[in-house]
Image 1 (spheres, rainbow, N blue to C red):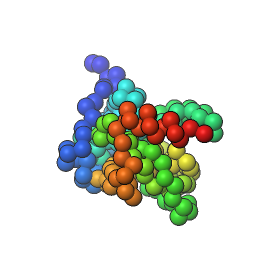
Image 2: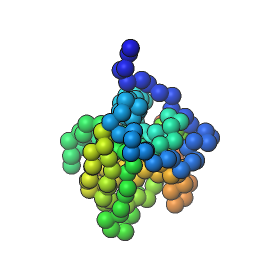
Image 3: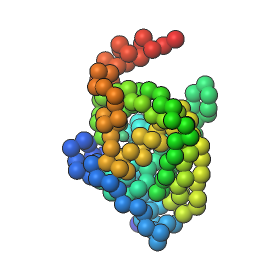
Length: 181
Ligand code: NI
């Protein structure tokens, strides 16, 4: 039997699963093939679709887990893909910061989204181990974006205005170019 990770179909905006509150992963599923495999499938699909995050509802599984990773930049090295199950987020301070986001379920679009700059996260691994971390900047942004998917919320809902909404090509050409220091 082939149990290597599968590339799953990513559903797009309009699929009802993206607008539902996802179910808590039941205790008895931790460390089972079903949950571990889904975690691996999410990671493979995310990487092959060139995303930095992918939540289970985006592959039509209404469960509270997501995968993410961080490409390296000046402030931190690249991270290994991680899967967080039943995550709980808490803002460390009320400060919001706007930044650009896109979504594999809303392909081709980018928009400015306000997010908490720093958050605390409590979650479980697919094996049921407790995970506890503090994230800031882009790390915090990715986790808040993915966590929103577990509550039926997409980044468009969080935008203060749709004025910044742009197609990726135009965004790269006109926005990214002028954002460079
Ligand atoms: Ni998304």
